[in-house]
Amino acid sequence: MTESGPSIARARGDHDDGRPGDTAEPHGHLGVAGGTALYVAAVLGTGILVLPALAASVAGPGSIIAVAALAVISIPLAATFAALARRHPDAGGVATFARRAFGPTAARVISYWFFFGTPIGAPIAALMTARYVVAVIGGDAPTTTLIAIGLMVIPVIVTAFGVRFAGWLQLVLSAALVAVLVFVLAAAVPHANPANLQPLLPHGWEGVGLAMNLYIWAFAGWEAVAGIGGEFRNPKRDIPRATALALVIVSVAYLAIQTVTVLVLGGRASTSAVPLLDLVVVSSGRGGGIVVAVIAAIVVTGVFNAYLAAFSKLGAAMGRDGDLPRWFGRGAENGGIARRGLLLSAVIMAAYSAVVLASGDLQPFILVHTSIAAAVYALGVASALVLLPRRSVGWWMSLASCVFAAGLLLLAGWHLVFPLALAMAAVLIRPRRHSRPAPTPSAPR
Image (tube, rainbow, N blue to C red; front, side, top):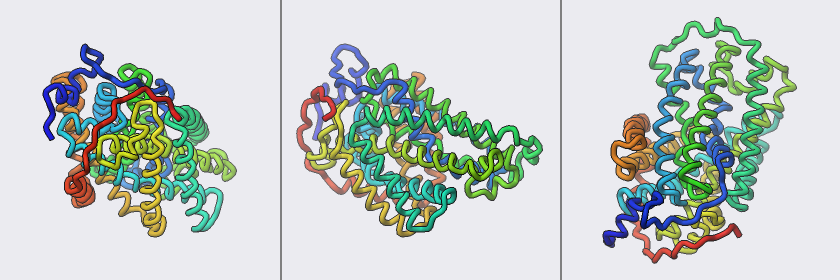
């Protein structure tokens, strides 16, 4: 199917910045505070529970350098997706960017990667968190499984009330998370020992590189929230502000956690399975373990709130655009509640959960997830090079992000077979195209 000149202009975003000819849809209800909370949840993630110890095990005190470096590298990546989302706020998120830049086939490929691939991270995060909680409160394998299931079911129910409700709830959860982290770190700091910084690079710069690879899991997530750009009241103003605030909060949080973990635990940090719990024990005894359990529950609930909001809107956008049956398209409009997209997301997540929870071995599934995420990032930032004004700040940021994304693909190696398989399915399955309904202002129902 070919497009006329005006259609291509609209697809390329030539008239969607408020200039004459703009046909922008009405937007949603999120402000800077709620948007920042969702961004923090998507990016901060479950990494705070295990990554400080894993990074310390491969880089020692050099893990602090790794976190600082990755925080700097994340600036162009976050800025790229913010620039795209503010110019093209749509439920399709990264798929919309790919459609505008490279056409419907590229959009379908990235939709398949994101919608059918990345939900495998849900049971991984839930099981990781459930094990952490059980380590604090006690329990057996069935208890761990039940906790993991509960951690996934509750956010599905919350998201069914719409992004606006999820955004306000996330504001409360993120505020509570930051408050608890500040409490744990403040209590542990008096026990810091500067001698634990020596030797700074026990495993050389190679160890720092390995620690950075581990922390990629923590600093990923900017692509997930791109799909809720249309839910902001003022995307052009609020998305950059929310992105900047979230980037500062996440970077400071991870840098503080890694630094305090190394300074307080020293060599024990590299062997700790529950580093935050160990920090609490050092500062307030075993009784403080409940604080860590609260952190774990807050973190995973917040992550799922952010990702499910994005998944549901993407599913609706795929129905709207013909990549899924049209029945799923309801709620794709800005401000709408994509309950049908959420339903399909829940089914996909349940299927992955059955496999992951039955296996119990997280490593292979984590590698599948990170390879798909690398592919999504690569095509997303490549789209930015086409869509953003050449030689603008956003364009230069996207160019730097392309270099970073290429590095992620190299790290993924042979695991790229998984996104390749999904891409082949997206190309071979030729959906029946239907006319897109005209956008109408819609309130959540």
